[in-house]
Length: 235
Image (cartoon, rainbow, N blue to C red; front, top):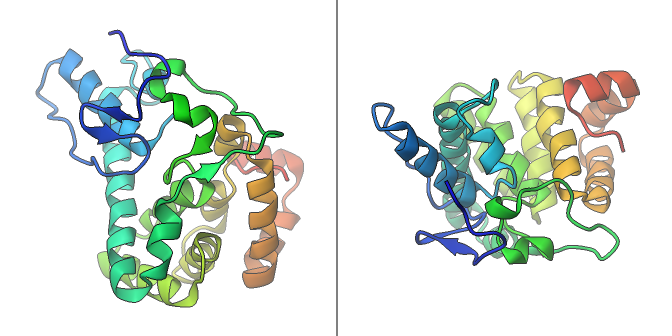
């Protein structure tokens, strides 16, 4: 299946990295259709490795499994945006504005077929650290009412997307989410490898120390080996 390398931001009517497409593929569809649907979800998600992850031979994912993950994370990202309309409208523009990459931090691991040309110079909303991690942290909670409370409380306490992610992370632990799983999303080693955004993570760690000291202490208490094994960035 051929894909255009470094093409337009819009593919099949879906913009890269805005999470607007979250319809799961039909399991009984043909394998080719499953792969096509999964890659479109990955495009909406802003995934720079969609070809690899949707490959049927991938032992960890494959088209249906990764498509379900793309769909639920995309859907949760849009839900957070929708809730911000009620609880903190000033955050919406900040969350949906791409971040220009630093000249000192060129893009990391990616597939030319899975990203638009603009990816080389900017991070789309769901590619940004906060856009990647915030919906994933919410999804760690299993109860719908707890997720809703978590989103509402975090939006009301935040003035920018970094604050929102840190509040979501700290409050999620208060709702009994596993702190290591929270840190795995909030300070993701995979995202650091793909996006090479060390400055964003350094800044986020400072906010974490200031606003969520207990969670920050857990991070500091992990050895380098423990962070690597858990998929947590070493900053």
